[in-house]
Image (cartoon, rainbow, N blue to C red; front, side, top):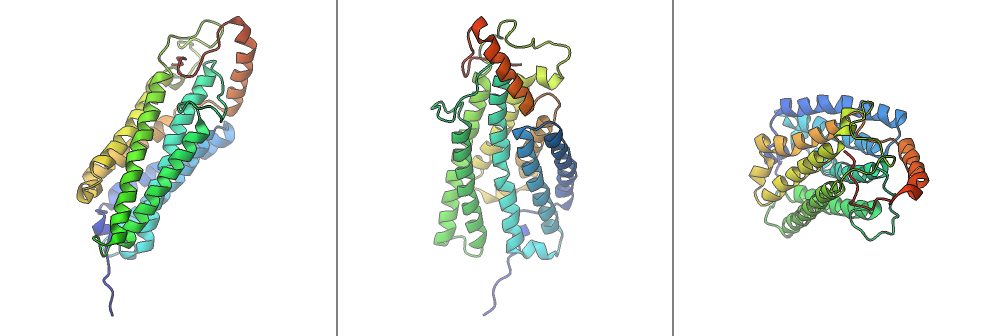
Length: 298
């Protein structure tokens, strides 16, 4: 009994070799840049970006191979699954990186480091990490099952796969909106008093450092735009996979976020965070210690 050969590139709207190659040429040097930064200025965000850029490099390489007419990759289930795993799994690095960066800059502004036992969802890195990772895994399972049931889209497995993907997308929209709210609320109050943190207009601070508030909100907004597009097209595979929409709303938004993470001055190094914490302890007796959501660092 002969089996039907499925063209996964055609099924998932993968047609443009050039578009995939363009993003590949961006992510290759970005991977090297973040590796260099991770060694030079150790920071969790840089390590996450190394993971993200490595995954995106692999994903766009596979996508370019699948888009090539007549290639073996276009009909390979393994290539299609690998592409989806790399694309979907990498998003946790962006979302968790943005969440952690807000808290790191909160510390740089004179705020305290919150323990993993805190119940405030805007301040608990570990809790947010677990939630996002769990949600991404649910989406990955759904995507893999969806590919495996591509020859029978009305099967029970295909229906379950779509449900898992929908649950994952809805939760990621929620977590991304939470992260945007975190970015906004952490900059709600006026700047701290003199002596608690350097002035936002300090001439020696890089532009990305001085404009940290704006950049973090833009980053969060771009991530939310990505997720809202995926949610809006969750029941319309043709729209979701249409490259004229997928590239600007999914790939370009991610790339812009990564480029902003690469700006000098936005991401504090681990040594700088430790120094800021020591300064906060020394300055605590001189005034009120800022609480989560009440510090502006721009």
